[in-house]
Length: 272
Image (cartoon, rainbow, N blue to C red):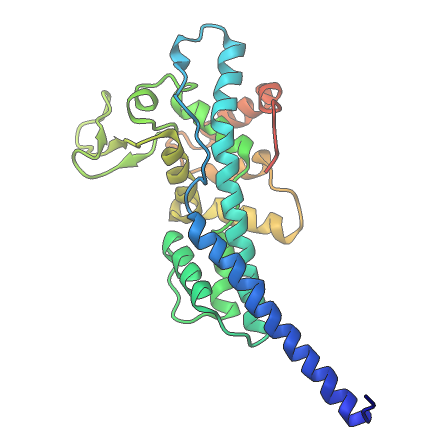
């Protein structure tokens, strides 16, 4: 069939529209639907199994390697979920730039992410959603593992054993956790109790990604992203200055642990 120049242009435009619709119908909704049904903010089906009795492992080398190898799968899984959410947000922003609306599942997933990351917006635009990317980003696996080792005494602390709390996270409602034996007079905090080590990891990562105390951490991470510099524990650890009352000494401890435990951190590592 022959068509004139105007017909060719019309035909080409028609193909472009069909292609865009096809992308909209088959790519974005499929990705969204998969994430909704798989439970975006759970650690997938990763099962860490029974927690090793770290306190009973006398050999230091064995204890360190066992500790890192036990927690690593959940940390990596959580980072993968964060990556998928981040990619989804970028795709939504791209759609907005191209005047493409959100499907029902897209809208549902975006609102779920906004709620999870405690981020409020009135409308969905590039300007309102781009800052969300500061929160929806990974945390270097090595940093998570070393901080867990520091805060839990390599899994041997009372809070890790009795409350699956590997990061010393506090709660402030009476009865919400375990009362520290050395809690100062006038203090009311407790150390949170979790149902599993996985839940402790989830709570820790959402804490760093949302709490105003770690705004510096998120800013450093965003700056590294903007410069296309790899996110590493050694670069991001400085953002944890408010994690401990020991401030700079705490950062020095973590840097020292990162340096001296590098051989154990390398084991079976899929760097996130």
